[in-house]
Amino acid sequence: MQKETLCLGLLSLGPRSGYEIKQMFEGPLSDFYSLSFGTIYPTLNKLQSAKFVSCKQHAQSKKPDKKVYTITKKGMGLMKDNLLGDASSYIRSGNFGDQIKSEFFLLLLFSKYLPSETLDTVLNERVLYLRQKLEQFKYDGPVPGNLDAIRNEKSVKFIRGLASALIDTGVKYMEKNRGKLS
Amino acid sequence: MQKETLCLGLLSLGPRSGYEIKQMFEGPLSDFYSLSFGTIYPTLNKLQSAKFVSCKQHAQSKKPDKKVYTITKKGMGLMKDNLLGDASSYIRSGNFGDQIKSEFFLLLLFSKYLPSETLDTVLNERVLYLRQKLEQFKYDGPVPGNLDAIRNEKSVKFIRGLASALIDTGVKYMEKNRGKLS
DNA sequence: GATTATATATATCATGATGATATATATACT
DNA sequence: AGTATATATATCATCATGATATATATAATC
Image (cartoon, rainbow over all chains, first blue to last red; front, side):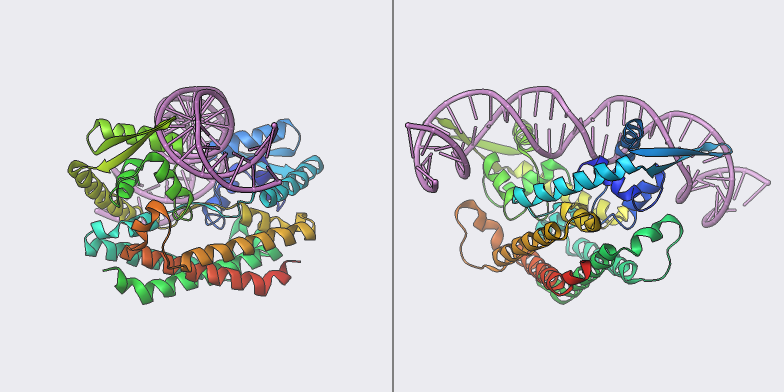
């Protein structure tokens, strides 16, 4: 998916600044996708020049102005068109997997070269991390700030349920089978 | 993990060419990590110059010579050192998640802008793909060529079991809950 | 009370990984 | 006969990342 389409998609959930878009990628979206500041800011500027988003500047004393972007009708049109194109590409491509870079799995793969205490700590920390993730995905109460919007979407409920099921399976497998590694 | 360490790690499982290393990233490793030709070949050249790997050229009539790389004692030393460093960094970093870019989850997230037939096809293809993956991970017979080495590793058995459990959970969740998306 | 770290907020840039392309041939498919 | 795929290495333009710069407020630590 192009960065433009992704930014428009996130702005379709409600007006946001570049900083807040980055927060989404570091929070609830971190398990699915990420974009850096170096990509987000130029993309928003480009979208603004082409009138796919509008921008309201909120002056803040002695902090940089907060630029809140709102998707335009033209932007909604582009987003929907691109999304349809992306889905078609996905279907035609024959490549239905995700792009993953997992330091954890590489460490596991070469674990026979690691001291057993080191491997143990790696596994412990990973399990601890996954347990926290699981709580986050299962938690149904309010979340602060601008992140509430996506929680009520039908698709997000589906995704959160899926993520919860996957993490739960992962944690249970690791607890049951980690003895077989050493 | 540095590309050098990763290449050395794969060569520690047995001598291989750059092309065969790429095949591993496209096959059994594709769900965990990937490197491109543009990274693999220069890395192998660099490792050879520094005597971390040796190279035997196998002449092939009218095809480019096949360069089979073997890890040296010096290379094994570097790999183990780096691996320990990577594990320590992983533990210290506090960042225990994986880096993921999932076109599928983005399409799900914005699925309300997609025609229901398109979404349906996306889900069908994904489930089909996951079922194939599941069979691959569960299959215990021999695999052709140079890919057998990693299948017998203790760590790989653990990883394959984990991957199978995760995919199984994912498929079952999707089949049960996909109706809630539309 | 002083210092350090973290959060807000945007912008830019060097580095380097990716994906495409080039080159060359054999085999399999249509 | 013609097209696509597989083997095999190498190079390179493009662009995303991660780091850095700038500036301040608040929270935490000592």
